[in-house]
Image (tube, rainbow, N blue to C red; front, side):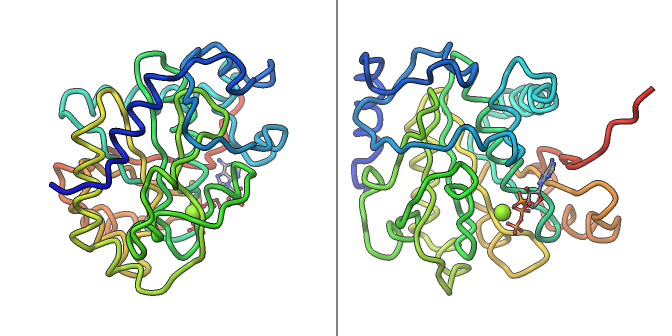
Length: 263
Ligand SMILES: Nc1ncnc2c1ncn2[C@@H]1O[C@H](COP(=O)(O)OP(=O)(O)OP(=O)(O)O)[C@@H](O)[C@H]1O
Ligand SMILES: [Mg+2]
């Protein structure tokens, strides 16, 4: 399979990591425990102070609120390990259910584990919300690779969180269904899956029942995580969306925004 060499570069970056002064998490986040750094991958400064208000609670591993994502992470990993899955798409029946918040939190939680790395890829080409949520500016994303052959090594950024890399940003585009369903996209996902050891790749994808993007992309990933919003997503939508996913690919559902019942 022809590739642009990004995997090799990213692997070199990872091996070259842990140089002092690459960036400093300076106590703001418990993720500082992790010594694994990417010294050559482009680094961006994220606005960690806004993480809490953006509901990125998984960044704070000692905070009880992050427990829900640790449980999710553990369940995902247990199933993924048995099946040999490492490419996971996060979708929902309808928009605004919390896909992006869930995908980023899952990635943050997974990155806290010492034995694996995580790549988060924004495949919601009409919205491109991951970099905004993390709080950095970006004008190039996965579409620039697919449309203009920009090497992925130029698009991967390290947001200052150990063991996490991100591809997010760029102009929103039309024709996203054709792009996400293209053979080039399929090759890219296969490349990501097969070349990285101990790496999860999480794709933030549009909702299943609006447009065809998610359905077009589905064949390329190992597994699907379905986000439903507590009290909002209808059972009909949930059932319809789940039925669109081949049973063997359904990793599970995330019940987002479910208020815990206090005793
Ligand atoms: N667990 C949560 N607690 C509180 N607010 C949340 C939670 N999850 C999501 N939100 C909020 O709900 C809104 C939608 O979340 P998000 O952008 O993640 O949804 P989405 O499914 O990715 O939306 P879209 O379909 O537009 O891409 C945002 O304002 C987000 O801050
Ligand atoms: Mg989103």
